[in-house]
Length: 95
Image (tube, rainbow, N blue to C red; front, side):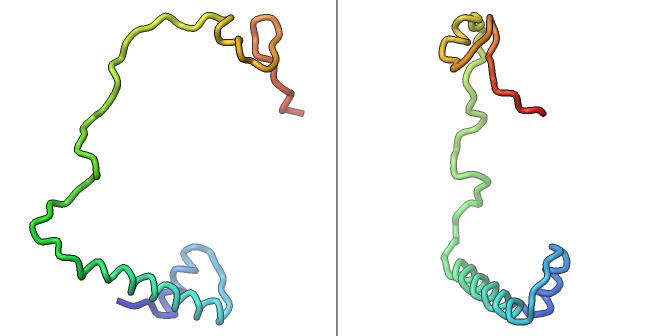
């Protein structure tokens, strides 16, 4: 499979991109090099290899949902750089 200048022009149109003729030529060459590189995967012997949807064989690895006591206000504010009463104090971000 190879990419033509027409393919690049079509893809550029879909992506709302504009290329000059030299850029379009360079993009065509680069996409063809990428496809040539990817085609090397066809040389790999995959006979007897099961397809994977993930490299991990673990399924639904989640921690147990254990109820814990919530943080106290003092614990939550312990490392706050600035506070006012029992609240975090942050710089004003809305003008």
